[in-house]
Length: 84
Image (cartoon, rainbow, N blue to C red; front, side, top):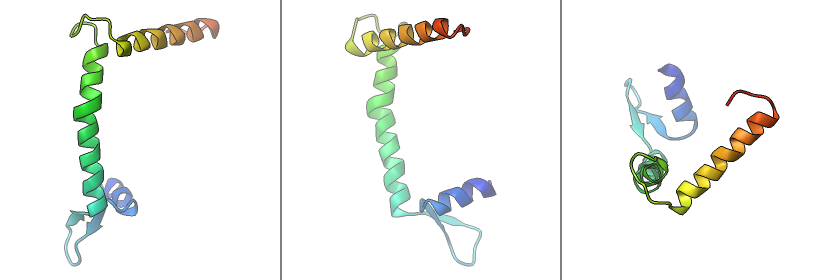
């Protein structure tokens, strides 16, 4: 935990409360946390729902792009003789 707290502190996301063993989230840390929460809610969850075959059966652009990406990875693995 000390390692994690030190890294957050060095990046300016938290600050130590003087004379205690407590930390406080900085303004920058709060903005970053809100940004990642919004990214998760607005981009990652809908995007993953779109490319997951069991949840959505329509043929969207994102699903098509994901299929092309998977095919390219499989082809690269086959060319390099790697197990996919």
